[in-house]
Length: 400
Image 1: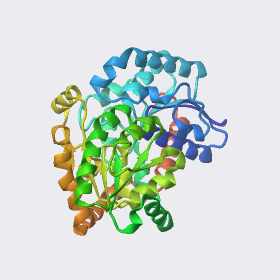
Image 2: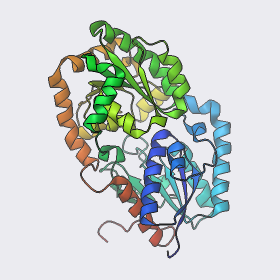
Image 3: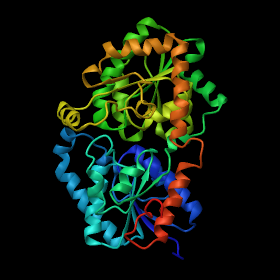
Image 4: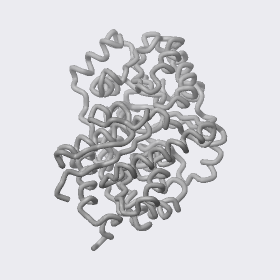
């Protein structure tokens, strides 16, 4: 391709927004003049994307949560597919959010057979629905995988796949000055412990997790009267987090996304321990070198379905890659303040436990691509390689 490529990107939630922004930045460096259209959030907007609609409409997770909003989501799927076809980009790049993104890709491929289609973040076919990769092969040419063991699942189904690494694992650590400033701002420089809370990035996660986390904080503060709390907040759920935080004791320091990633990563590194939901924040916290406890609760309908489909017994990526329970994990019925608090107290009171977690993080972060080339740059070069091949062709088969 001699001219600058025209790409259509779709992200459906904050973690995908960050991945998309990193990819856009790397593509702009590797292919000057590249043009972007699509759906994204504020971070992709900062890289020049004018979103077709507000990405927050798509930030929904779980079967029970999706059903009431299904008519609106289906309309957005059709709307987005029609916009892709009207713009006729050189490639459609869908980022995570498979429930939305892959449905758009399927419709676009059906109506525009020659378009190249790339999905960033392999769906967790190794965890459930192993046949999904074969179904994807009908409308996805290539996958950019974050996990090192994912490419064989894709290539066996006939989809090209490159392991590009997890950008959160390769994030540069916050400077000592930034960490010290954050601890001072949070009031933790007087000697009390600093606990970071990360309840999630979706509205339904805040509704479910903040009451549990708030009660856990209240109980932890009984044992540690000098406790200070910091909560990084994504823009999409900021009003809900502020409303929930207003009733917390002690009152937390809220770090808004408008303050920038540097402040957020300083908070992650400044904390003595963290209580986190599942998702990208688990890798971000490990990369910051902060010991953590993870907890998560979804609707009983979603949980019961996932229990029947699941092929792994953890939702925590660190535990999955380590092959053991490095991070204490409390899911569904175990996700209560009564059960969570002893694990957090143990981290706050026993430096040896924190050190054990940090030692275990290293090999996992290396496996996620920490030591190699920047994951966003690897992803961009993989995209450009796909564009150099004939449309509808993924990566060459292994050994070719």
